[in-house]
Structures are given as C-alpha cells and as structure tokens.
Length: 174
Image (tube, rainbow, N blue to C red):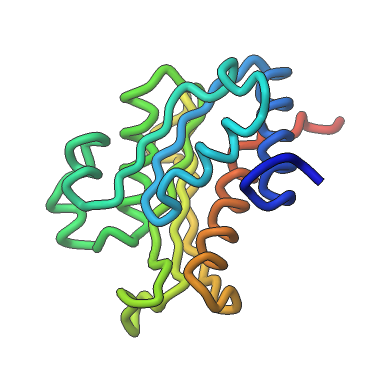
C-alpha cells in the first residue's frame, strides 16, 4: 500500500512511467480534459518525477484547448471536443508548447451528464504524439468505458490508459 491520495494501481503505473522514461532519457507532457489533472497528479506522486514530467495542461473548456494548446475552434465546432481530431490536435499542441519527447492527450465525457447517443457517458479519446515522428502518424483511439458506471470510474480508467500510453515503446525483439 502506498502513502498516496490516489489508488494504488494508478500510483504503481505512474511509478513505472517515471522509471522507464527516466531510463530511456525521455520527458513527457500531458494535455488533460476529463481527467482534470489526474494523470499529472499521479506522475508527481513519484519521487524524481521532475526529471521526466515536463508539464501538464488542464484544458477543460473548449476555449482553454484553443488558447493553451492551439486547437482550432473550427475543429472543435466540426467534430466536437470529444473526438479523435481534437485529441490529436491536443497532443500536437502539448508537444509544440513543451520540451517533452512524448505527449498524451485525454478528452472525454465523464458524466453523469453531457453524453449523447453518438458520444455516451464513458466515451474517452486518447492521443499520443512523439517528438520527431510524422505529425500525421499520431496514435489516437476512442474508448468507451461503459462498465465504469460512475464519473470517478470513467476518470480512473482514462488515467490508467493515458499512463499506459506514456510508457516508452518496448525495444524490438530480434
């Protein structure tokens, strides 16, 4: 059991993210919407995280996504804040506005309100961008955490997925 306000599984995964990125010489940034800084909080629970975490952006409103990360308001209006296009743009913006080697973005509908037929509560979109990679090659994925049942459950599952995305790629095995 850890001495943390956060659940043990989140803290342990954050520890792995810090240790593996430190060993790889990589720094990270996070752009969070529905998780409201939970991923950054998890990373900063770990001693030595300042060597890995460059910065975190909590961009809850559409305006903050635009102002802090450079997400186009036309993109938000066309696809919605909870979309692969916006998550991709958030990840690119976090990379451009930081010194990090890798950036992860999270945007979603945590509930209990705000869902729609197209994007029900529990819909979360993730994007991961790595410095030096083709910006068009950003990894983005929509997940539906419909079994999470609660706002905190959706946020917890989203934080775990985001932390997994921050793990450095495993070296290719021959």
